[in-house]
Amino acid sequence: MNAMSNMKYCRLMAGLSQREIAEKIGTGRQYYCNIENGRQNTTLVTREKIAGAIGCKAAGLLGDHKEK
Image 1 (cartoon, rainbow, N blue to C red):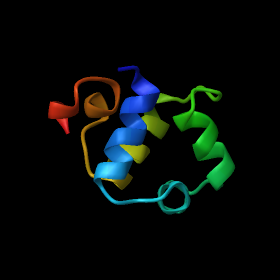
Image 2: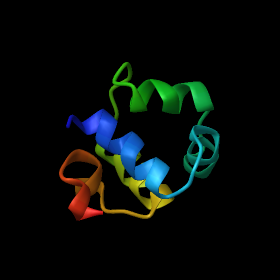
Image 3: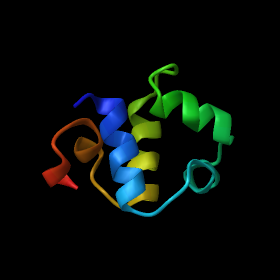
Image 4: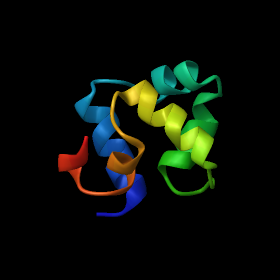
């Protein structure tokens, strides 16, 4: 499983929409959608914000689902 599909998996398991994550990290839904679908690169800071919004570790967004 790649990092982007893992990000989506973690978000869905948390019961959050793309819009909710985008609002929590202070960006637009389309920008977050592009990140989740691998069309937009992110910084480590942004990944940390996304992880915090989802409620998992940043490493959990990149690796195995068990690292949530």
